[in-house]
Image 1 (tube, one colour):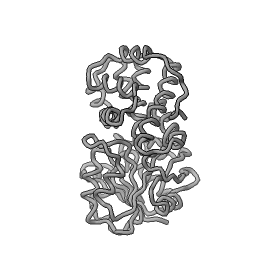
Image 2: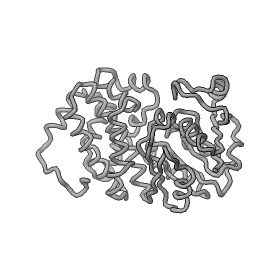
Image 3: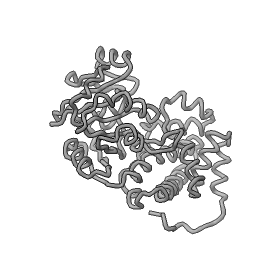
Image 4: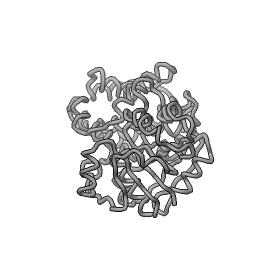
Length: 333
């Protein structure tokens, strides 16, 4: 069994810890904030991030960063804006043979780079893997059958993660398209915000189906322009993650969109929900679409709503009244 350290005692980090603990791995969770560590160790819960779920006593939750020392696998499960700092903090304590795994789904808000690019920049000595796919923490922690993808340019590392961490309730596939898996996981958050806006406007199922379908097309367009494989967007980290994030109330992006569609300002919606990765990712994707010349009308209208004061209903009409065109195109899945 593997010795696993998870960086971040948020919902998904704890969900993975609980799942892997059930299958007899040695699991430690490192959390930077003392008050979070103290509360979890006192109550064996994190009601804010993972309500109603007990954290088994075998799982060590600590603010001692030295738990990274002898881990076989270190999993970073922090918001995208925290990843760079977390990597810098952990770097002095990482063994060169340790495989690094990232679960954050987003793009850097300043440079627009992917999370694996940040990992390779800060800790280039270690092999890194992206773990992504349709996997709400609330369900992983309750042992609901889940399938995800381990993506890496190093097949040996990805297959190691696949072999060690797969179990009867958490199935892991391997993919060598890191660009596609990361962009699918990041960009679907934008479409999920848009889907929530549609729900807030009470547009109906027809609208959401159209939005999701055209949304995956936009994701694939940008992904392929940045070097991804088209087929990846038909898989778990593409359509799979898009479906679960656009349709579930577990999704913070979806819930934030509902508030915005109901009349709440984007800034207030994010304050109410907490971490909404699709918010900053919209800005990054919009900038990348302009840099690459890729047409992304849904992303553009989302950007206008979130950052330019566009009314959600006006954005719907702007999309519906675009010039007529064929549905099937080169990048359509």
